[in-house]
Length: 298
Image 1 (tube, one colour):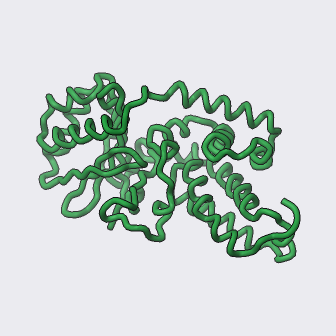
Image 2: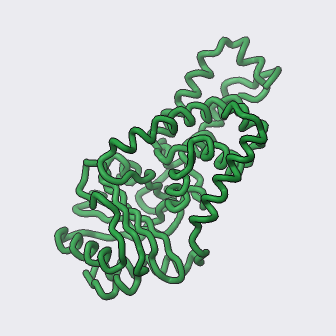
Image 3: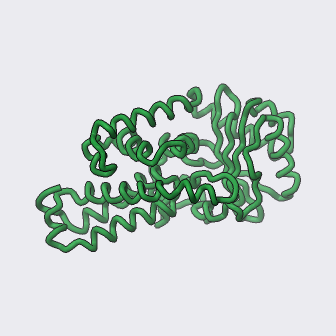
């Protein structure tokens, strides 16, 4: 990062990429936005002479954003322990779908691919902060380990080892690949069975060892602990539908994969993501915390 800076226009143009990096590192849209804002604040706090010395403002902003995210991840574990119930990453809408036209929300700037799937983000949560930064920056965004070393303040060799350890976690947790059309069909059948309160049909669609995790954050009713077993999940889903007359289920993309949105009287109450393997649902992630559902309003 040596001579001849390129000025304000280039730094402004980096925001979309930085939001994408920060969300994958943090799993929270609000925290990602804050991290990127902090990086820009530090950039604009530099004397103009210092800005002009920086060859790549984008690389500088990425380094600062990465370090801010690393600090946030370091304190996140304590915050997760204080969180009411299970904590799940923020669900992302697809702004090309009805009701989600492009806007100024960070969610509208997200590139939806496998690296933002709920299953992938949940695995990232199991990593150490350094593993997560090394893995996301190298394996997802293809940053060289020499640059990652500057963010983590470790040697390139150490960063390579961190990424390899994280890669093993992802490989061990990965479900068998399922075609997108099959996933969409299974989720559609879940929607129909849920609407009909058909417990038997839900049991057939859920893997016997399926797990449902709900995130209410203390701001919405949610199962305080994961529900294990397809039959128990089916009964729980049917009970939810029974207690919420007028509940409307919509097929929507959630983090780039087939999911469901539950609305009542026009208000979004739940966004559900699913993992499907061998034609059955193995994981359900239901986000009910209203603070995490703001991008879905509209």
